[in-house]
Image (cartoon, rainbow, N blue to C red; front, top):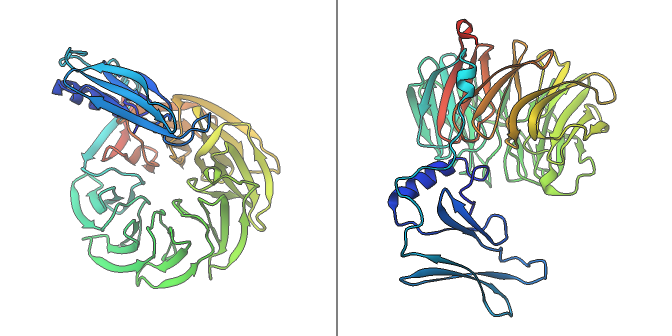
Length: 454
């Protein structure tokens, strides 16, 4: 579907290197841009075909490819019109060097610029991680695209146990009191023994469970795609309450305050429920009408009587914690879905869509930017939350970069590139140790060695 280009596919260079070695790959066919484009993927011909949706002239259509011993001919067939030839590709003559290389490879120069950042261990798995790891005592817990919940040694990354669910895991697991809780696209929520992965209980939903888990005082809070948000006792698996008023599906990690549970869904809505019985307290939509602008991926934060969110309309919003009314909403910074909060609750951090991280004051009834840091990560839309530990803000990107910023003044401390794929929200164990996972199937720990500062 996607073109094999930098910015469209994380591992485009691996794909083109592999295809080039075959020697007989003649054409990549795709369609992501819904328009006809003739491209070169590191020398290998590529074409993007129009969508079968109506074009600017109201005509639906599709592509037709004719192949013979000499060439590939690509046509556009608009409904009610003669087919139109748009490209011809010779399949007899060589069009690229099978021993050649990609025109560009990912840049890992940051790792030599900041030698104090070391990879303590990285474990390569076969499944992709679309959610953050969790840890307790000496174990790290993950959920992956193959449907496995896995436990690794916090010390060296050795696999300790694994438990197989029936479908992929998108929402991150949580662990407390020796119990791991995780949802799965197999329509179940699982409680597992953290020591050995033994199944303790399951809760069934009627649709996939894609939400991340929050645990507080022995209660797990998790949303699913069956219009339901649940509170579950982690020791017994007993449902404490279930709120069934959600219109969209849920992927976020809910915020649990002293008396409320707050989460967004893909229905333009932020929900606030009573933590004790699950009754609806308020709903916020902020006038959003397009589903794609929903505050659904962001992990909400609360401080000074306000709930803070960012959303894909590129706005940051402060909402009254008690009644759900908008206190302020700003488009000053080009934010999207990634944010975080200082440990003391005084600062709100957000990642923008171009290069920078911004910081706003949590106090007050109007938006007030405190600092902006040019991290230099380029165009960015990965939903990776910002996490603070010991006054240091840690973040990550869609291109495998992890970075650290001084939370008080916005000074960039370091950057380290782990790979070239989407990073999950990092988990700082301490200011000197950062747990991470990514869609390349890696889980690992970065450590800071101050003796190697540049």
